[in-house]
Amino acid sequence: MSATSIRWLAPAKINLFLHILGRREDGYHELQTAFQFLNLCDEIEINCRDDGKIRSTTPISGISPQDDLTVRAAYALRRLAGCNMGADISVRKVIPMGAGLGGGSSDCATVLLALNHLWGLQWPLDELAALGGTLGADVPVFVRGKTAWGEGIGERLTPISLPQSWYLVVVPNCEVSTAAVFGAPSLTRNSTPMTIRAYFGAAGNAGDCEADILHLLNRTRNDCEAWVRERYQPVDAAWRWASEAGPVRMTGTGAAVFVPLRDEHQARRWAQLVPKSWRGFAARGLKQSPALGQLERLGRR
Image (cartoon, rainbow, N blue to C red; front, side, top):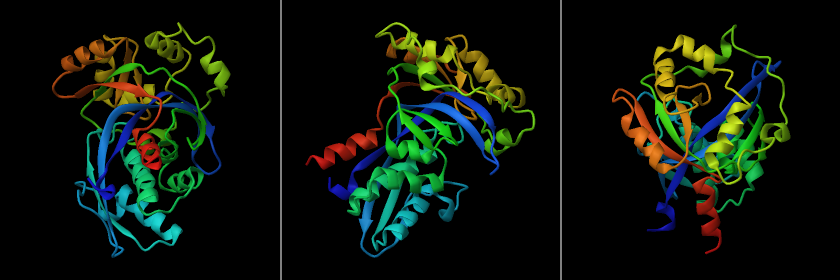
């Protein structure tokens, strides 16, 4: 396989917590969260073109080419870099859309990372992350590729080390409008700021991933969860069903919910029991995005 046809991996994410501290003057919300990558990945194949054309060869139903984040990312990078290259971008979607798992942002970030390498631009991660932030609030964490503590609208990132726990992830048959959630007058917006030191505290039982994650979940919450569960019945139903497996938390603004479990066997066993009308899968937490690992290996060649 040539360098231009590497299958780049774009991982899903979960938010282990999501606290809303208040509304900002610019209309956005001041947040605190912890991002954990999962080993559930979209696959992206990029073939460089020398005629300057940029196109998606796997268009998404209901999304126009100009709104496709991978295409927008490629055009933005080319414009700012003063580059005249092009690319054909193919995405094999594995991460459910509209579930709070970050698939679109991850695809966007992986395209930025891959094209920065394939086009020989050699932009530093700080500049790529800044560009990613203009395309979506969650794009910078995927560009930087490390599990992270997020503040601001999620763009102020501090790398943290999280246990590589296994999770049951359940995606109900609905999509939640992020704009509707953050625009809701009754949404909780007064969480007290937390420090990273306070978040970790005494980090559970050393070496026990489940205990460590449960310790972290018990200290936090998702401020969007109650509002979403009240108004989206499928999310509430999935939350109640998943609670049979253990402590459950919604990721982002939903609709997906997750439960940390002791090992892969437990996670896969519960995933097989998920009702057929929903989607369920077992996934392991990752300390680093696979895309970053791919770039590091390519750099050593």
